[in-house]
Length: 118
Length: 118
Image 1 (cartoon, rainbow over the protein chains, first blue to last red):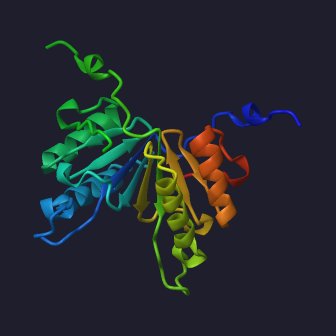
Image 2: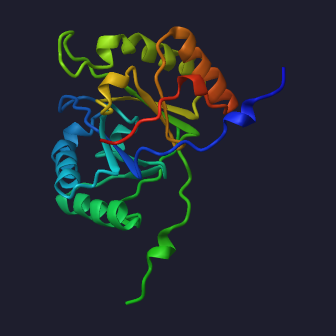
């Protein structure tokens, strides 16, 4: 049998220009791991979701996620395919990510976090 | 003021070789939208998570997600940065994705779903 793996490596059409995953994990206030929810992430993500909808940015996917694994770095979100991790903390941060990254394609470096696997 | 956007477009180090998001949404059996949970997705995702851990594939990120938005195409998962959407339905499908895609870098075309935005 011949090797056919290469045959399958055509590019698939991409569903989204950017696909955002935002951590909605909520642990109790005293939990030792903390959580994005404990540092008020949810209102930020809700603002982002509403902005995408209001501005009809239908090529931006937005998905609530469980724990992204770096709980002390939250509020945490990641944007693919580019693999950019952001830590926004204010409504203005959210608006800047939407305007700059999603609409203009310019990463917001001041909000980027570079994480390292443990 | 000069345009500095280009200055920021260096490549960031990537946290994961592949980052999987698997839908854990569970709606009730009679819900009109259905859900990945209603078609027995959770045992599949649990198997995947355990396989990654058992085989120490620490460069593969695995995150539980909320609804990925194509409920009648579930069980649904997406792998980034390549943006490959899979619909596995058996334990063997999960094992093949782990072995072929994650370990050998060969997409499993028979399990791919190509979705279109509504």
